[in-house]
Amino acid sequence: MANKLVRFGLKNVHYAPEDEDDFGAIGQLLGAVQMTTSPEGDSNTFYADDGAYFVTETNNGYSGTLEVAATDDAFLTAVLGYAKDATSGLTYEATDAQPTPVALMFEIDGNVERQRVALYGVTFSRIETENNTKADSTEPDTVSLNFNAIGKEFTIGGSKHTVVKAHCTDSEEQHDAYDNFFTKVPKPGTAATGVGA
Image 1 (cartoon, rainbow, N blue to C red):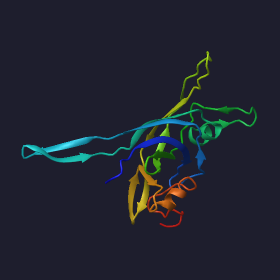
Image 2 (image 1 turned 120 degrees about the horizontal axis):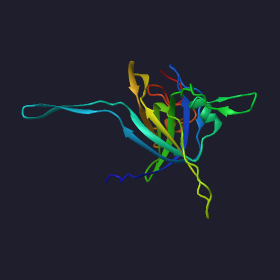
Image 3 (image 1 turned 30 degrees about the vertical axis):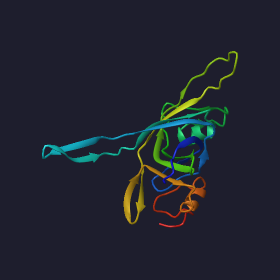
Image 4 (image 1 turned 90 degrees about the vertical axis):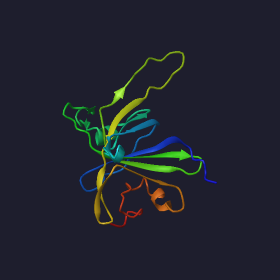
């Protein structure tokens, strides 16, 4: 009898800036509250012989929102294009600041096995915030980070593929990939230890 699988939880959110060839230093974004992702793309049905004959799917990645307790200056400068002014000590957002695409990695739990997930080609929009006065009890405010994930090109088996999402579990077969997931950005077509094609 097959196991009934359920998923729950969100933790270990990490990010790594992307460039054309590789990834930069991995940072951690603490205080993950919730993440939603929605697939982007169209489904087109071709009709022939008086019925649906062929269906094509266009994968344009995902749009989503990541809700966190707060963002730190490391995230703001590495991902959203903020800058630090050594003279005044201020961290500031210029009107011409441009976000840096990142690999976004996170972990979800489950009743059978945990799963670690990577989204590639993720670009975050400017931050949405809400600040409320304290009342009888203090309820922390959160930060919402909207993003789009459009994928990144990898060489897999000698061919180039644009990959938008990858995951592994803590199963025996994927042990190395799971253990190394947050120490080096996982890249399809490359060995889990960071050695390979």
